[in-house]
Image (cartoon, rainbow, N blue to C red; front, side):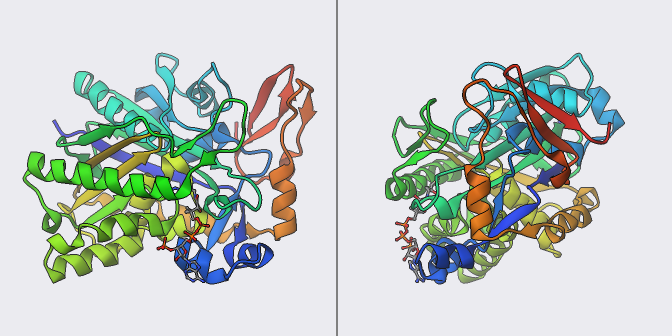
Length: 390
Ligand code: COA
């Protein structure tokens, strides 16, 4: 039985910052951000968006009534969840109107959470071929104003339906995974901003990729020439390129050129959204699928997932006949085209505008946020969510 991605969609907030302007404000050469880091624009989350609303908006963009009936498992991958106890999946389940007879859980392992979700979904569908699983990767990346990580912030979510009817990509089964207890990036529960050992994190990302790639080749019998492209978890778009370059020498010139060219296409969306942690790898896949016009059915895409702390996984998928008909290129172009740029002063103000931490109630102005699903406030320590369409 084939199991894989039946649908994929994403959502990012309606406002962003221009990275050249951020560089100027921080007294940094703009080329450091646009070339050295590889980011052009950075999505900014208004106070009316959190990981739940971002995920719900992404899910809303792909599900129809048949999905609402058949989805019986919601897996919410996040490292910026809104509650230590209740899962974000339960809120999304209600906000998009799913069948009550469903499981709903949150999965955490830094940026690896959605990948864990996809693999759990595969197992669920193998046992229940009629089921569909909604897998979400949703995050707001916050490192702090004027910190080394600031240029690698972002906000957004990817939603995928995993089923035995993989209209877009069949997921192959020769996955290779790796865990090692390291402190390259973490966020203690008392902090709303991440701690990161940036250089160490870069080194570990590449080391993990090299280790899983070596075992993947042995296990699958495949090599670089079998890959149309490799998509990477992208905390910033230069990161995957650093990893790809470490193995390129293994391939003949023609494969090297193809992989480098396709790498650039796979980073277009991420370059203009920033880091969305759990969703980043899947945003990269979407970028490749929606921007590479001559991708053919049967093409194999490698996928490298990395979640600091750390867990890495390398797996692959094969594109299905007519996969392009099941994408939402127009919708995603519109999402980008209707975004508004905010100044650095406005971004700083929005960044500092946070929900009360003392249990006080708050009512938020939802009219400024064009998203269908928004956070309208907090009452009695309960976040209030609104689906403007229902
Ligand atoms: N023009 C072009 N490139 C420039 C430049 C300029 N004027 N100035 C600097 N650069 C390049 C550097 O050469 C470097 O490239 P390289 O990594 O290919 O050598 C890159 O820009 C970044 O410069 P660096 O001095 O290393 O930046 P930094 O010390 O400010 O930190 C990160 C960069 C990514 C480590 C930091 O943003 C961070 O900690 N991010 C969060 C953690 C993270 O994303 N980890 C990844 C694994 S998940």
